[in-house]
Length: 198
Image (cartoon, rainbow, N blue to C red; front, side, top):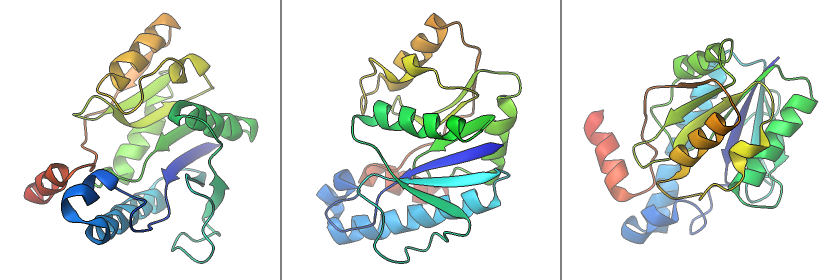
């Protein structure tokens, strides 16, 4: 069983894309985040994963948020830092019988279903697969089993995330595969750069 894990937030002005909101305002930042959510939803729907699980950072939505419960299983993220929350999501997937699990966020509009398929396939011959971002993080992480060391001692939300994660993988003797880089949308410059590429 292949499980796609998606981390997201409810699109509430003032609570999403705060770095975008600093220069573009909370309403425009929320509009952009809704666009990013839809891009993520389309890629997830077209992906070959057996199951698709959503993990909300700020609690389950109170009504219909456009993610059909017939297709997407909805969960609340656990407490803790990003590493603890991702490790928990992976642990839940493997406990449910996943052979391969891939986790993504909801702010990478150029992430396609084909790239997701490539990530799952890479796990046939690698212990881990990562998709680097230009800012030093990653837009995707895939595993065949939980490796807690990949989520411990990482300086989250810094340019060191990918380097530290790869070092942890090497220390654990894991074989890893790197996908082509893609950019997240965190700032107005990121957004304008994305628009210029379209």
